[in-house]
Length: 213
Image (cartoon, rainbow, N blue to C red):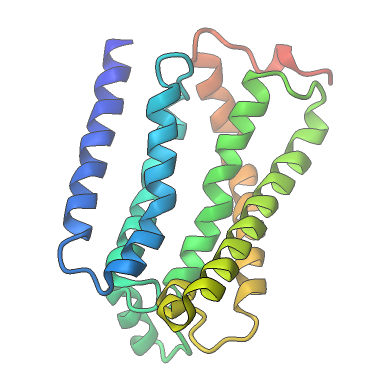
């Protein structure tokens, strides 16, 4: 248990360090705020529930990765992330694809978070429905985020252009939701078995005994 707390504290310190770096001379301060706000809210919620509800270390690590993607996107904006600018120019691509990575992660990582919550709280008792429900949750999160972007754009006008990151693509919203869908399916396909093992190690929790096969 002590080692777990040290690991969680290390992730929190690293995240704070990333936030401090990202707020120094960002591409646009307003865009930075909009991009990192979900990470800040997520961390605040995790800290609030921590005394009563702790996720597996695997989930905390995935959350840290997702927050890192958001924070880097906030610093550079999703359309101007330097590494993906280099990839665009090197391979003669039509756009900077860092925003696609961000929306892939928006499905990939929440899929495991939702999966853990559903399993540990015994929300469903048939495993065959688990993946379907998790994917639906991830699509709902993605659609909700697109509506938030729409609302911000309506309220702030041109100042939200960097936040939207459409890069001239009229189908950008649809691509974003598709990437979240692909991310959630990929995550469940690759990580479910490993996630079950980590859950089994968490307070001797048995995922197999919680399902009706």
